[in-house]
Image 1: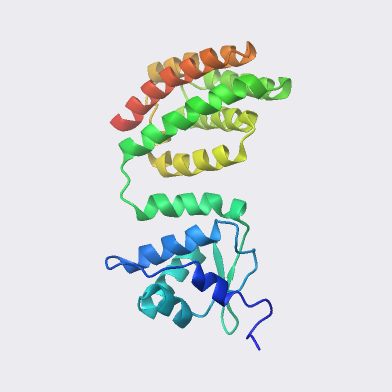
Image 2: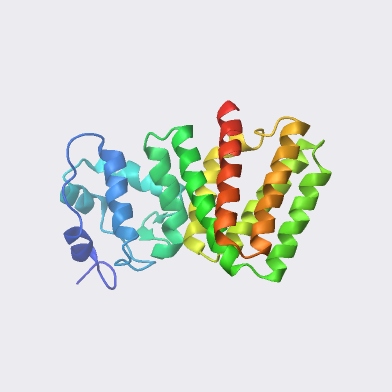
Length: 242
């Protein structure tokens, strides 16, 4: 009789393969994340014991234990002493944590993150131009007005800038894209919050956002993408300097 109902140990083990020599902890975490986000393991499923996973992956139990501990910190699994380790969310719910983990355990530099953010923001602008509604446009107009009124208060300016991009992403209507942008922005935030460092740079940024907004109001996807590309070029240059 299995130790718990709906024992998935065999299915989980069959989906995993031995880990090659190298850095086993990060590789164990990657293998488990690939499995969890495949959708084949339901939220709430209890994972096989550490010794079972270690044998399947052909690594030491300590590597499995450390990988699971890291995944618990990220909110992907729930370790219950005396009971076992359980998958916490569905595949879609795990995506933001998975992206964050993948970026953090790999060697990613600021330039690569800026390139990724630029591509995502340009695509978001293109999508939003065809999907934005009156309420979203009104919200973005308000954030541009806040930016214009706070060019001498850079903390408030940065908050309004973030709100504009959040509203734009929401208008694009693609939750996966929003999650990806959230992760990249969070990793760049230490730079982004001080990228606009004087009133002149703030005025330039205001005009760039106003141009994006004007393209959205015309529902012109090409113009919105082009305006965002220009904004991302200047914003990335400022972030790189920061």
